[in-house]
Image (cartoon, rainbow, N blue to C red):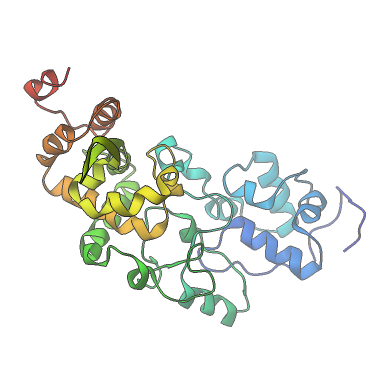
Length: 298
């Protein structure tokens, strides 16, 4: 490939086959490696401008679609399906990781390599509501905390006792998105509600309560484990939550939807400004607390 950027260059002579469920940036990066150039250079050569290839997974303009369609001789709809741009909804964007995927399915990665697509990255590895691979059904492996290890999340999470409920929660979110977000209650708003901060007395130190979360009212051991990383446990950016904590969050979702009455108890245990956020997410999830309950906390 010439080191001179030629905006009028012909289509690529060799186009690699996209792997199943592969991210657009992954497919383009494999082409860059094949042609022996860097990702930024390849983006310029394709006429996409100065950008990281990973940007295209979340923001892809019509001009860029046309350019890629020309260069790769492919269906524009197929290109768009390799991105997350059909999930621009603010709620869903909060559940999609950007940059390097925090999780991986090693059996699928091995199959990619066997199919001559080594290094391919699946779209599913960016989804912060998943703990299992929808392709093969096996648990994901955490690439942040357990880099280089093939131990799955089921083997490494401290919340393995909640696994069956977590699987139910995962399917609730998946079904909600598949239905076009037409379900009666928004599970994404409930996930945010469960990560709202509150303050709770710590044994032996009642005058100086420690930070806690609504989820910690359902599963008390969650608070103790989450406090050392409290900056990463927030309702404003759910993708920062380490995936070893994700089974507890999904299990909490399943419990709330199985028994919505538990919201009253959760709200009573939520102190200070956390109640405002709690009520906001209740409204977004289309749950209405009894009038007497709301008045008692005003």
